[in-house]
Image 1 (spheres, one colour):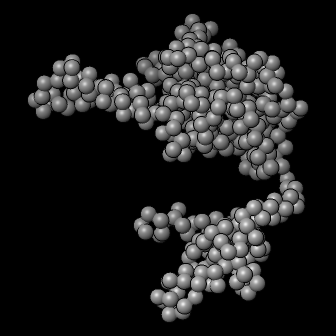
Image 2 (image 1 turned 90 degrees about the horizontal axis):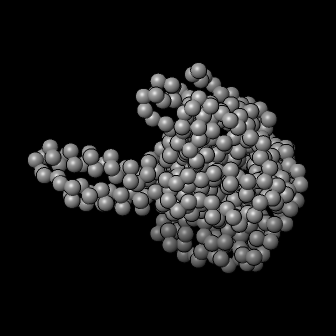
Image 3 (image 1 turned 180 degrees about the horizontal axis):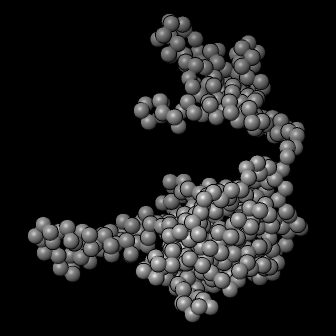
Length: 398
């Protein structure tokens, strides 16, 4: 019980949320198709309307066995808390359904009559298919994760008519930012460029890595989208922020912090698609699960981790080998390889998108070809609620 009963986010919170959602005008409809016992009995009744299926649905604070043990009353569950009891005697439930299908049909009928509420008003035009062949999206990602590819090849197969208006195109090139439409919806896209680029200062920058200039660009673009009330789509294939003395002296930490600040305080709907790597602080800056994306999806090619399996294994091998040597053990190359392989195998299992989805770190693993549909569906759902909070970046370092 210590894991489910007394704490703030335990079962009691559910009933509190029921009450608060009702006060916010959020419609709640419950269908009782099986047993609702004890605390669970309150859930459907705290909803706006409750349906119960005849002969299979039941609601009671204590079942027949507990009633007999507590007060000696002999009664069956149907008589105690079935559909007839609660629809015709107690008045606890509002509708009696003859079966599950009838219950769902009744819900559809109720929902069909709900009035319109204020909407967010996101911009939408007539949807257009990408001009480029969408099915080519399957062949863009290289087999080796460390190989380069052009992220625009993916974007151009996701956006309407393959039209993309790049923002600060020649600056901070390891992050692509720009405006487009997906299924007619106006969106701002923030994506990791995975090919090596050369800045105008002559610096060669690794693809998939966030540098100070790209973090600055993304921060400003995210702010612009909030100003214009344009939903944001993050396309992740990121290995993290640039490291080393040059980056530290250039202020990579404060520049990365600005980007994280902008993502955290963004009030427009955010949607995240992980197409490849999603490593470390790069996951944070590119709107990982902790940053409240409305939906976060992974392609089957995705990996979520603090760092890649090989890199993590190399670091951990050094630590473990040093520990063994300190104890007087001899660690030769063969033993180091054995340790490396063991650590890498364990790490590789944990970076799998299926491992992540099983722990709800992502909402779904999707077919890449369905990406447009999922994003459009998410924006359409988000459009039903107006944006009430004002965008405010708070204090940032310059």
